[in-house]
Amino acid sequence: MRLVVSIDVEADAQWDLGVPVTTRNATYWPPFQEVCERHGVTPTYLLTSEMVDDERAREQLSEWARRGTAEVGAHLHPWTTPPFLDRPGLRFNDPVHAFPSQLPGELLEEKTQNLTGQIAEAFGRRPTAYRAARFGIDTRGAKSLVKAGYVVDSSVTPSWSWRGHAGLNGGGPDFRHHSLQPFLVQGADGDLIELPVTILTTYSLLSRWPLLLEAYRSLPVRAARRLFASRWLLPQPMWLSPDPRYRPEDLVRVWECAAMAGVQVGVMMLHSSELMPGGSPFRPDEESVRQLLGLLDSFFRFVAERGVEFQTMTAAARISFAQELEMRPL
Image (cartoon, rainbow, N blue to C red; front, side, top):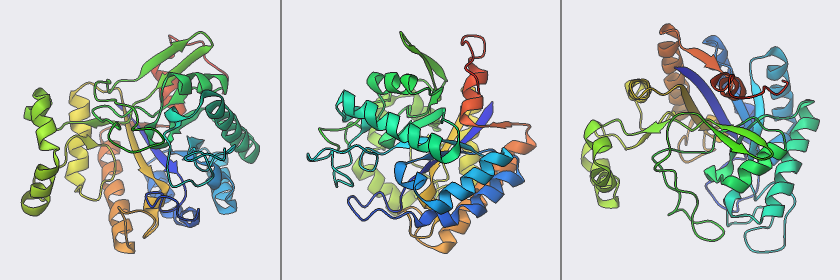
């Protein structure tokens, strides 16, 4: 089993819809990068348009990419990636955050091409790794990525549905029945490799009984768990992510359950704004950010001691399908 560490690099406080777009979290990345380099992790930073425009972000990532200690990819936020339309949900920084899969086809393709070109100009190399905002990928999005020269997408969230999350017109995609394994999206114009984010149920009883899992995730049960059992009953399914509710052993549990399930590539994800105190609802102060870095340091040490190979998103995708694909030049 191999490990990919991916960061959705985006503006501050994106959970507060429509607030002014600020990019202060870029100044808080070095401690995270230091933790990664200490253990030989080469993270993949997936950039939104506003972060490419941030001078501090460009300088840091250019240096890390030059040293080979980071990969730069793309993360398309429809509300900050041009062009925009003067229509509800399609304007710049619109309080309605559309899933990319909800955009008109031509607009989605333009935004994909613009973000790709913006990153290529800033870093001297076209990105090959991608994640859609709010995990909003569909077949149209996959075709746009192939056309723009991408090798890998990581927008699929197994065991998770975004149908109940508001967007431009209703909710987002439903990935509850998708596999955890990498898979190849084949099309007439080329192929795209999908590396799903690692998300799975860690309680065997719930994994065997989907209806029981739905009951466990219901609102009254969530409230009861918070009130009475938050220290020993964990949210389900669990993400391979530094969730503030996780202890080091909880993150290890996700990894070990994924390994027992035969997962080839573990994909961890977090947001760049989590690295800044108050930049996200998950990490409100300096102590909570220190806890995040400590959690990652402990987890990376655990997997490194077991001989796990750390890879960028593009490298992991290429290795997974080396025999099936005619390899594109790096």
